[in-house]
Length: 239
Image (cartoon, rainbow, N blue to C red; front, side):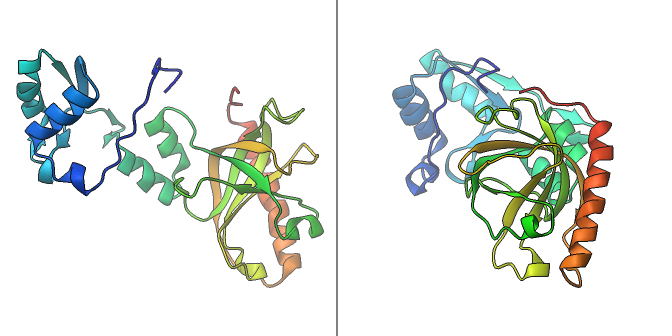
């Protein structure tokens, strides 16, 4: 949003008091009195007020007496699908990383800090960074991904590096919670406490349970080889 020129962002908590406001009260109390709007831009299907009874056209009529102009932006589509947050979530839930990227206009990212894990990957020869992200961040479907990994706080990672990411509850080692583990393919170093940015490039396979750690080790090796192939054919992101 900053790159688009947005200088200030106001997050309006959607609580019961806000939900009960009529469209007229919402315009007067929130948009005019609280935010002091001079012009408003909304999507064509924008709804507001109690039980979503206010429409974009109603907003234009209610704002006009205050001298506030309302711009209605037409709905956008990509490859026959309406571009919406719901469609993006559906694509990510299905492992359709390329579809999500097309809808967003950029690769979906996960950002967080590296925390201490069980270090199972290290014993298998594939050390991983356990990424702790904000709990409200939407996670794509469980499984293995080819990713680009970068960090402005880590020397050598200012330029994105190839990686493999696993999201899931690690059924082979009886994991008790969902973790996000990232293995860098061409970089080694201490990442504990550092912030990482992970860009999803391709969904490689769903989560599965293996018959022991050796079978898991073999599959991770295959995942790494496949990720390298996919990433070699993708565009390296900028930082």
